Length: 163
Length: 160
Image (cartoon, rainbow over the protein chains, first blue to last red):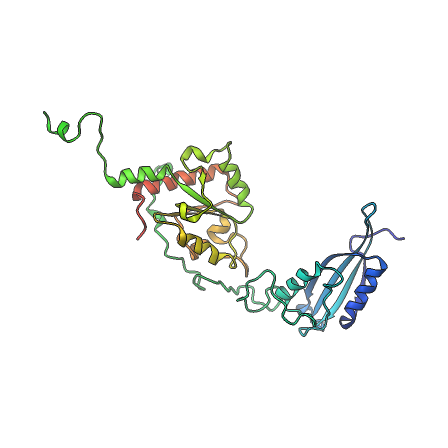
């Protein structure tokens, strides 16, 4: 067995076959889904645009050792191709919701997926590279950033400054 | 009997009703700590015995907005929680004051991004800004004293 590295071996798998490959890896001993995330390669011009990344760990429950890791990359576009991994790892539920929330990458068997972090009224997906960096979508308050009915806090003449 | 003794006999003092109200209110601040982030740690240390917020009559956190008169917003406010903050402010009875505790509440701090409110004064009126990331307890105490001065000077009146 090779020494476990932090990143582990990187594998590219076809997005349409992600569930089968992940199930095989889980059967192989990679029992822990460490992270599920996504990268938007729009500025690099990659096609398809996103990489959904599953990071798995082979964990020895008897003595707590890390027996090796693997990093699975699935290249996907904007249309949902991936299958959900909820049945393999329950934690994938929220992580998939986060990937949907931030990148707009959907899952074929989760057609009514909900956002995890942002509010329902939010339009767009905030971590996409083409989301305008200055775009704000406040739920209340003026979009221009004007102050709310602010009292004149300057009426305070602090004696502490000697005024 | 001299006139001043008939109006104000010995053992009494005269004042204005506003001044008396302001004096009473500034030493009985019932605060509502709206703690969302790391500034909460500094708020705890300010409120605990070492720095002792209670010296200024503000050591009584109420966790119902209907019993509080000073809303202390401590920590980053995201757009998602902003309506909750506004609703809590609306539930507080007059007269009420708002303290923005830390740079995140003052201006958004370094979170100039899609999720963070750029200053809570876009949502609720703010009486006192305490900058710092997080502010030292001394800064908070100084701010509290300034708020007390403000309450005294405005007589604790509800803002127009």
